[in-house]
Length: 550
Image (cartoon, rainbow, N blue to C red):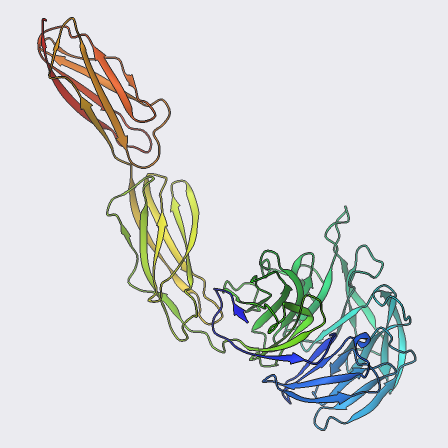
């Protein structure tokens, strides 16, 4: 597994799964077991694959038919698994199987199974043809008997629950169900019947922005619902009314399409899976708090040892948040891998030490300026250099500068070209990551002066009254280009007095020519001056010419 440059060290075990399709993963933290099933149409025998938290195969739970959906009881003692003709119950201690409820219809297209409100719920398709488009109904189980709740919709409906919302069942409609504007909805499962609560569709008045549902997850406190939407990215909603929640998790990397999402059970992390090309990150692990500015860990899955992407519904956490389980698949969707990832368990402090310095000692508009500092990180060192960000605040406002990498010793250099005269305040930030807390910002105010200019003159040592004087000159400058139409002023001083001559235009290359017919003999002094502009200082130079009659 290749880690993106921002990633830190993380333990990752990988197991090749003996399946050719994938449906569901359930995490049993009490017994440290991971249960995985195939899509029922991809398995002739039907089985539940069982792995431990290190990624080692433990056993296979046999079934009387292909297994698709699964759910775990609230106490972790029972695993409910759907096959063709029943909802089976496995004792998670002994792994013995019993019949929880026979189903009135075969599951030719597989089922989704959920546990909420102390009851088991499952989806049911009555057809054997196109499993993605035919109507699915929601069934419940009471006293060992399955019954139709009369709630139904097109497509392979997906169900989700969360410990933080024990009496709430969420339903998502993937594309292909005959709906141009698929929905999300929730149900109250506290009573004997399903009571529908909030519902939402996402297309605008022009039919754009419709939900392309892949997965959803309920936060540990039950207040937030994260939705993997292949057309949008990661939607963050309030579970109470499915309205947009405050904050967001930002966009996935360019080219990545959302495929899976999962909150950790301890409320610390959020994992977002994707289908992304090449070395683009397929998995982001970040703080669950949408207000956090800590950079996520990024992982890119590439090739025959890892898979190429995170499978839909392919993420799950241990209850304490110490392990993330990710199911990846190849481009064809015919091979699967189980990754066991251990995010950092602790965060350490970070700080800027020694303040900021700058060079050169005199900063001028339009010339390179280097701001230097050092970032110190406690605890675990990152695999790759971390980045610091910087902004410049001057008379024209606040300007964000390009982020720069810190060297192995923590030192960094922010390069800039200030473009306004006056004080420029540079503020450097480190936003932290999963291992390090953000550092307190550090600032430095730099006085920025106008850029210097210089004049050079080339004049004859002698001239005559009738031949005149011809002086060539060059105006040079630092920083930005001179304002259009720049000119120099010429003053002549002789034994009769001093007076200004006409101004002379300066060419784009800074050259100019002064021509004059002197009015008297002896020494004549020509003084050429440039007044400067908003970004450049002025300059002056003089030349003496001895004038004779002939």
